[in-house]
Structures are given as C-alpha cells and as structure tokens.
Image (cartoon, rainbow, N blue to C red; front, side, top):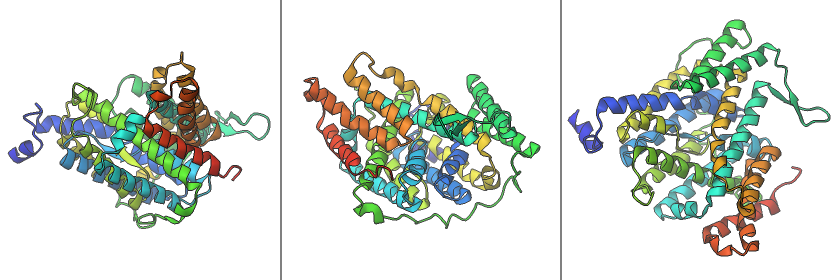
Length: 437
C-alpha cells in the first residue's frame, strides 16, 4: 500500500488510508441523496428515471475520480442542485425547449468552462461577481427548490382562482408521508446524523411502500438500467436561436458560482487556502469540474461540479484525493440500487428539496441591507427567481441592475470589466426572452 500513500502524498498531509476511507464514506453518505433527487427533478423534463440515475452516478464517478487522481483534492463532484431545477422547470417546462436541446446548453457550458480554464479566464470572471449578488443567487435558488419540493410533495398546490397557490391536502396519505419525511430529515439534521437527507427519504419511502401509498419496488437491487435512451442525445440546433443566449448565460453563471463557492468553502475548512485566501493550483480542480460537465451532457444529465458536502469528509479527516477515490467507488456500488431509487415517491423526496432549500438560505445574511445599491439588486434576484418560476430571469436581472445602480450612485469605478460584460449579455436575455411563450 506504500505506492498509494506515495501517490496521494498521505504523509505530507498527515493522513492515512483508513482516515481517507472514513472521510470518503462520510462524504458519500451526506451527498448520496443526489442519486434519488436528481433523477426525480429531471423526470419533470421528460428524462426517464432509470437512465437518469445511471447518468447521475456515472458523472459523479467520472468527475470525482478525476478530482482524486489528477487534482489530489478530497472534493466530490456530482450534478448540481439548482442547475437541475433550472434545466427541468425553466428551460424545458417554461421556455418549451426539449430536454435534448437543454443538454446541448450544458455541453456548450462544459466546453466553455474547459477552454476558459486553460486560458485562466474563469477565475477572472468569478472575481468580477460581487459577493452581494452571489449570495442572492444561492438564496433565490434555495427558495425556488423549496417551492418545487412543496409542490412535488403535494403540500402546496397551484390555485384555481384567487390566490395563485393554495395548501394541499395534508390529511391525505401522501400528504402525511410528506410531513413525516420533512420532520424525519429535519430531526436527523438537528442531531447531526450523517446522511440525514438520504435516511429521511428512505424511511418515508418505506412507509409509503408498506402502506400502499406508493407501489413497492419489485426488487431492492438489480443490474443498472440501460442508459442508451439519454446518452449522446445533445441537440445543438438552438445555437442559432438568439433567445437561447439567456439559457446559456444562466447555466454558465450558476455553475461558475457554485464551483468557486464549493472549492473555496471546503478548502477553507481543510486549511488549503494561502495567506491571500486563494486555493493554490485551483486550475486542476476547475478543469476536473469542467470536464465533468462535458461528460454529464453526453451522459444525459446536468451541469456538475464540486459539492459543498465534501466538507463533511474534510471534517472527518480527508485531506487528499484518496478521499475522492473512495467516494467514487461507493457511487459505483450504488449503480445496483436502481429498482429502489426509481420507486421513491414524490412525497418522500419532495420534503428533501425543502430542507436543501433551507440550507441554501444562509448566505442571505451576508448581503449588505444598509446599502440600497447592494440590497435592491440582490432582492430583485431573489424575488424574480421565486415569483417568476425562472432562475435565469432572476440571475440576469441582478447582473443588469447591479452595475447600473453603481453607475447611478457615482461608483461606476467599483464595477469590474467582467461584470459589465455579463451585464450586457444579461440585457440581451431580456430583449430576446420569449415573453408569454
């Protein structure tokens, strides 16, 4: 085993194979919910559950192995929450694009990420985004996921007259299971139980199966479903559609923010940052998530990157890429759980989205509420994402208003050139967006 220790530089990081294995297990348990939740969200776009689960796991394995072997960092990679909701509910269900076309946007974003990483432009673009806006993106997407989860679980229904939404039938068997699922996940989270979200989903699903509220899976394990129906289905025909620019921009910006937030956040916890708060050799982790996004599009799923849940593994002692390799191995084993995963009812996984949404609200406290130039653009992002059912609308709104407000306030010099470029592209989104479409 000495060659493993030498390759991952375990001694210099003060770690051991056993510690890295435990850290990998911890990270996997905390993020394994994506195996069930991502296919459930993408199913709303018409992507079949079984193949979607395979694509989710395959992407996680590819990206995480690359992170471990190439970047030697304890970061796990998987399809992002938020981006998958934008893909399914905004691009496909609201804007009317086919999921194959939406996958084309993911592929283009991945190729752009790869090229910009080699050119060292991605870090420049990230540095041009003001903290107030990035915090609002996370909060807005958190509320969006919350509404999706409440609706999927049947706790909130669309209104037929008067109020646009109304309470669901909480007394129904499915409604009660949704409440049980929410409370179980919340209680386990409060007790800091590893894998709280996954355990809550599985517990509520078991109740649904036993009581007949949802059909039980025909088997608990089995061979992975055939991924062929969604592999290599990317459609680039919308490239000539000017209104598609907004879709590309939204996917690009959301993934850009998620990746940097996760990499810097987890690195800070692990002590990887230098005295200036930068991650040395950040190009390697960024290249891994860029290639993972390209792979994801070809496999049939959405934008992927480093997961903030990797912090759980770091907390458990993970310090090298060996942690990531163990995470990837566990994801590979989960391929054989397809019969169970595809049978999980919305009443079980919907509340998980609500909990995930609540966890994404923390950055809102970092917004400067005393400065209207910071507050109003941030609030616009959150309000538009929440009330237009369109993540891209909120992100682009904030990118347009922020530099404009700074200019009006006589503080235009505070706006980086990169942000002006993003603002111009966002303005084009509003010009060419298919209103009423």
